Length: 146
Image (tube, rainbow, N blue to C red; front, side, top):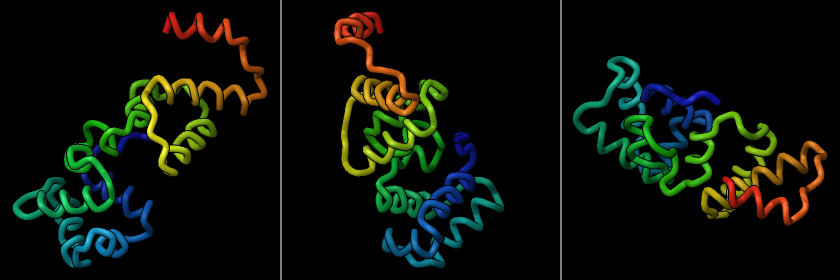
């Protein structure tokens, strides 16, 4: 999945996730016209100005997103999201099905460290590909090295 490079890319991605800008406005306790104005400005100018920063902050907080990510595209999409940070650092290490399963686990409330996410993703990849789990002694050795 490519990283959304512009503000409008991120806003459109959120619209796709939530179904509509109207739904985003409802979740964030904003008027639809406020969100529509923000989107129009982002499309026209490619940036934000004036009260738009406050609107973006309300959207980020309402959707549980990092304000920095929403405004700039930098950092993790969700604050304290070790899985997103790990995937950003290692974009092609695991299969899409393993990543999707890990994201579903995170979205159900799991909060793991990057090391724990790495172990889970490795196990998911092995299980999905039919590769047997290595012996525990081998696991301990690989954990010492990496």
